[in-house]
Length: 133
Image (tube, rainbow, N blue to C red; front, side, top):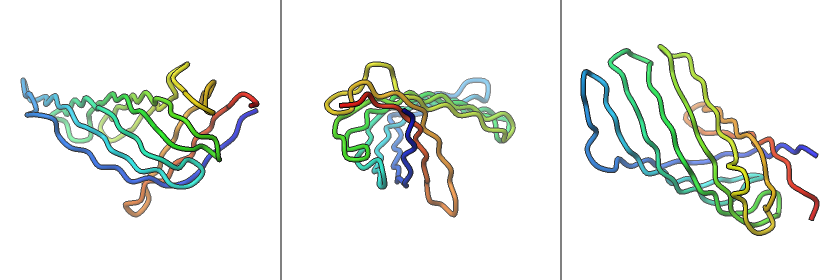
């Protein structure tokens, strides 16, 4: 059975070293630290690789993030895999649970995470499935 978890999160990103620039393209590495509230309550820690192009609104990123907390009352951890790109402002984003990465009462978790930023606040909808305990 598929469920939808909703809530908000805050995120802090810190550069990890100097970006490398060649031919106008900047490659960087960032650490991620998140705090989730709502149906998913907990923290996320991860690493992000970025590519910023000289064309305004065109960029790409990949990230791996371990989330630890409770999802609608079931505790454990799992890993999100992020893939995102912008083509002159047109965004494409995929955030999914890495297969077999969940632990504790979240074992067997699968799902897709969607985010929306409104007035500076990050909102999420996490469509997921969990085996019956």
